[in-house]
Amino acid sequence: MATLSVKSRADCLEALVRSSRCAVSLLSNIRYRMFSGSDVEEEKSSHFGFQAVSEKDKTQKVYRVFENVASSYDKMNDVMSFGIHRLWKDRLVRVLNPPAGTKLLDVAGGTGDIAFRFLNHVKRKKLPQSKVKSGSTDSHVTVCDINKAMLDVGQKRAQTFFHSSGISWIQGNAEELPLSSGSFDAYTIAFGIRNVTRMEKALSEAYRVLAPGGRFLCLEFSEVQNSLLACAYERYSFDMIPVMGHIIAGDWESYQYLVESIRQFPDQEEFAEMIENAGFSNVTYENLSFGIAAIHSGFKL
Ligand SMILES: C[S@@+](CC[C@H](N)C(=O)[O-])C[C@H]1O[C@@H](n2cnc3c(N)ncnc32)[C@H](O)[C@@H]1O
Image 1 (cartoon, rainbow, N blue to C red):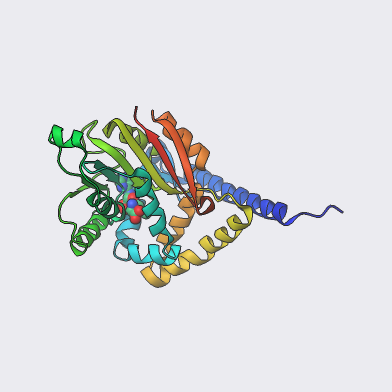
Image 2: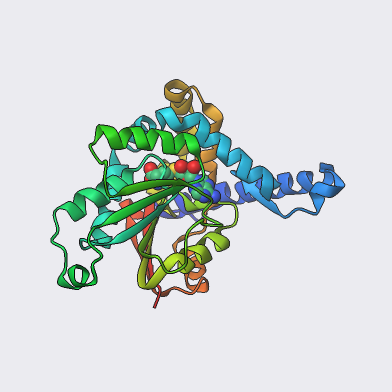
C-alpha cells in the first residue's frame, strides 16, 4: 500500500479544507439566490466571509463589524498576531521609504497605525531641494476610512501620540474616494482591501488619485506558502481567533468574519494580476511570515 509523506498528507488536508470551504460558499450562494426576494435578486452578489450576500448587505455588514470592534481593535490585533502585525506595518513603511514632502493617502486607515508610522518616518528625513523650490513644504497623510467609529479611535490616538499636524482624517469609501485625481504621491491600504465590496473599483480609484510616478502599496493577509504551517495556521485561525474575539472584545461573529474573509481573499498571484488590470506597472509582491501576509506594490507610470 502506498504511504503518504507528511508533506503530501498536509497538502491533502489543505485541499480538503479548501474544497469544503468552496462547497459551503457555493451552497450559501445557491440558498441566497433561492430565498432572496426578486428585487434583491437583481443585485450583484458578494460574500461576507463564507456567507453569500448582496453587495449592499456586504458593505453594511462590514460597517457593523468595525463599528463593533473599534474600541478593542488595537488590543485584539496585538493579541491575535502576538504583536507581529506591528512588524508587518513597519515593513510596509520601510518599503515605501517616503521622502520628506510626501503626500500619502492611507485608505481603510482605521485607527491610524500606518499614518503614525509614516509621520515618524518622514520626521527623520530632510526635505529634498525639488520640494523646497516648488514650495510644497511638508509631508502629509490623509487617513480615509468608511467607518466613523474607527476614525474616532484613530483621532484620539493621534492626540495621545502627539501627531497633531501633518495628518487629516476623512470618512469615505475606497470605491468612490472623495478626493481629486492625481493628488497623492503614494497610496497605502493595510488589511483593508479584503473588506471592500468591489475590489476592482477600489484599485481603479487608487490609480485615479495617484499622481504619475505615484506608488501603490497594499499589506494584506495572503496564502501561506508552507503546507505544514498552513495547516497549523488554519487551526489557530478557526479554533482560537473567534474565541479570543469573544473573550477580549465580547464579539465572536466579527472575528469569525475576519478569519473567513482572509480565506476568501485571492492569493498573491491573483491579486497581483488584479493590480495590473487596474493599470499599475512594475507590480511585485513580498511575502511576510511565509505568506501569512504579503505586501503588493505597483506604480502609476
Ligand atoms: C482590518 S481594519 C485595518 C485598519 C488599519 N489599516 C490597520 O492596518 O490597522 C479594516 C478597515 O477597513 C475599513 N473599510 C472597510 N471597507 C471599507 C471601504 N469600502 N472603504 C474604506 N474603508 C473601508 C474598515 O472600516 C476598517 O477600519
